[in-house]
Image (cartoon, rainbow, N blue to C red; front, top):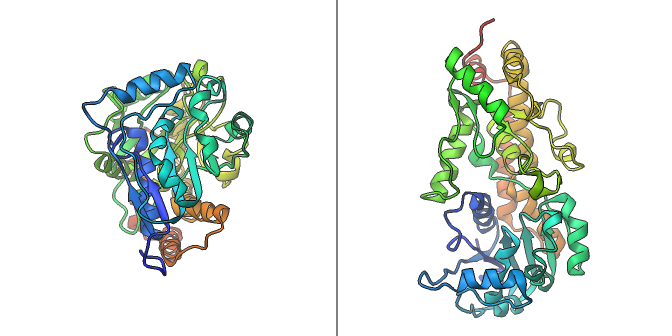
Length: 385
């Protein structure tokens, strides 16, 4: 999509070619791609010299001294002037990658940096990396509790931006597949819940899909996200828990939640797990039965599933409401709209076109449906009555 001048007005600086196989970068790439879909944007995605050891050395040095070295990215000259420079930072140590865009930043009227993960107790540890954030005009952390202390650290008011996903990719409609997976769990999991579900799989024959290997690298990140969405759309239940709930020593007991809640709701799976106890969750997931609370220490998830299996109407309501709410509120396009408001830019037609597509899909989801659709959403009844 082109601006009226025929030149891109947004410069999207992407780390996809540097961290392109890291599973937690998938939503970042989705957001960048949607920006390029709905706006006049140029994607700039440099690579590190694979033979260079500068990146690891620069990172180690920056933890201990106020010396920020270029990790091995060639300087990026600006080919034109832009209205906005946009960048997503996964972790504070990623910030050393942004020194390579000094010239690019100077060619942009406003620079915006999103910061995905930074726990309050880690701010002091990352203080040298965080100096780079002060160079951006607008800093937007995804973690709500981090906003105030990070603002104090960098001497600049930060603005919270909620997470989101590509809601169209995760939505099962307009042709919902059968929900052949009884329970889908990925990533971190409760040991108590996992053992109970293994027992259920053994004794009742349910299909419990969970990770059996440990790793954070995808062979192909795009294929991984597509596969994950396809599995979620075929799942009856979807396990969720707050971020790093099993590592309180790392989080300092700070309660935040990640993409899983958005992915579960968007796919129409019924979310089972721990409801995040913070101020943000009830604002973003404010509809009845947005999820079914099952503490990660609880051993009665079998009882919860039996009760839900008996109430087909409730299941259908949970699925449809979650999908519709995500389509209308939690697609990345709505977050981009907020960023445009913060930068003073007007949306381009592509943004309105995507919102219209989301609205029409939501209307399809909330329609009366057919008996066949209700049966597909219901899935198999796996527990004895």
